[in-house]
Image (cartoon, rainbow, N blue to C red; front, side, top):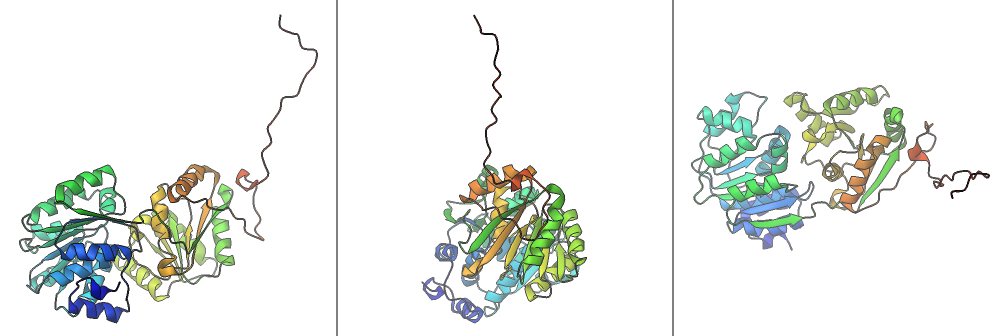
Length: 398
């Protein structure tokens, strides 16, 4: 099945062809005809499945230039908003439709000018969109398609009250709502029931991981986490590595640590870094100027980075589903990739949860020429039962 069989407009098909894509991904093949038919959609799809194009291609095909916002896309982070806006511009370049990008951390003036210039598509983070509403620079009266993306992450970040307000600002009559979330906890399901009308559900491999990814746990003593990370980088033939940390502080510390080895092509990305520097880090990593990107889950969630050869988890993620999101960066488009996770004794429960979640036993490996401090995790010999020594001469019970 090709894109030309899905009912997309000629202008959008031309842009797809220029992009070099020929075959839709499963979620695109399922979602595009449904969206073109005007139905509400609730879609569960993991990172790297082509979700953005699944809603961008049909919505671009549905509307004609009006000079007022007709498509509204909500994203949880600035990086995601920027990325999605780029996708709309890429696939809509022959349609004549204009895109406005609204997010915090930068001035309101330029964004207001984009809206005033006749934007048909608005991609925004919730807080900044509400700012524009109160300043009367954003009007919702002509919104025909509302797209709520990464809703589970918006829930995690406390944005749902703002999102609910935005949903109410959009016309209910005749509005098509597209709802995408990598996970569907009860709170998300309740929210979806409120804002969707008879939605069709699409779920694509929510917890599956590309078969081209090789997984490994690297057990180590707690005091050697940094040492084994550096040794992994030293012994690995990589061209692009994403290292995931739990905290912003860890991301900064690891970036500095890696630079001490002489590897200067490394950058950090987390919410404490300015928007400009985060975009520079992301663009530099995509272009190959940086070979290593150290990131937190929130900063990197959903960002489309192709060609990542290795993902390293500095710690086992506390949420097993985050493992899937992290590993989704590598092994895309049938390319081979490696996923290394540093494992210490205090993370065994998390490791077990990951294995249960992905329904796969992850092998444990040891690095050659690395001086390990003893930890029970490295002891592969079978455990023998301890028997009490028999003592004779004891009194018998009567």
